[in-house]
Length: 356
Image (cartoon, rainbow, N blue to C red; front, side):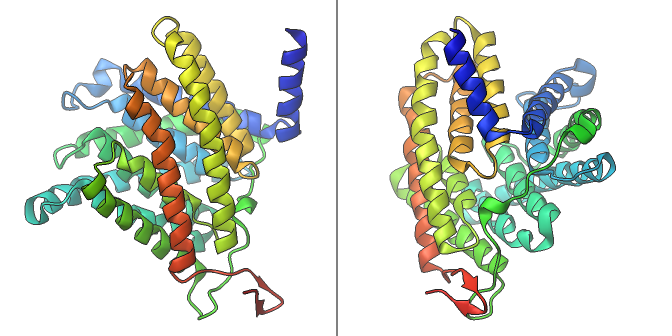
């Protein structure tokens, strides 16, 4: 028992030798837990329509805002967390405004709205760390609203969730203080211009949008169980160059191929020991924070594990549904890689010369 534990700790030390990202991982879990707990309070959630999980909505906003935030001081971190939580709420509100119109006038599903969030993920990287986070949060807000089936009458729930998320995300960051050093998104690679002069961020946004629209069209023919999983995979594998995208595709598929089977092994224990499963999910999210951005494969595996075991604890035991996480992630990643090659492919630049 001692040797496996020592090996595991040594592995953690190799990923995060200075312990800084472990602290961020704890902050992610804490923010999620605070938001989920506050959202269940009767006095807070009494004005929310029945059927909407205020805690789940707020926890999603707070968790991913904490992931995207990457500042060095409490003041700037708190400011960014506020902006990021509001961006997620804005994305959710945009979805709830547009989805009913698409259904009423074009007989189209709400997943078409996700294309705008996909574009924001790529394009807003041109505004630095905060811009990248805002773009991601807009998509996360849309994705959460889509997954929860929010409609045009749910603006109060979104506003309350944003308020809870701000509190839940800021408090742990104030407590972590200087012990946490943010990681840069170096794994995305340097962002350079397109050979034809197009801004790389614009190209990345267009690639993500094209991949998203293709998946939406395929879903109308194939009937994907969770098309949002494929869309999310294609959005987040898009890198600053075609080569960088293919590397992220490889890492995302590899991580998912490991994380999903590990989660399936744990499924028989989910009904008997849900607390233990939640602890395992929390540990996986800490590993997720430690692995970003350099070990994208480990991060993807950790998140795939977390998603599946939490689905199982919450009552989802359909094996086809759980396995869909694997093959739809592969599908979305491959489509994202294909769009990176076909839609204005980006090449790395060195000393002013495009490498072809």
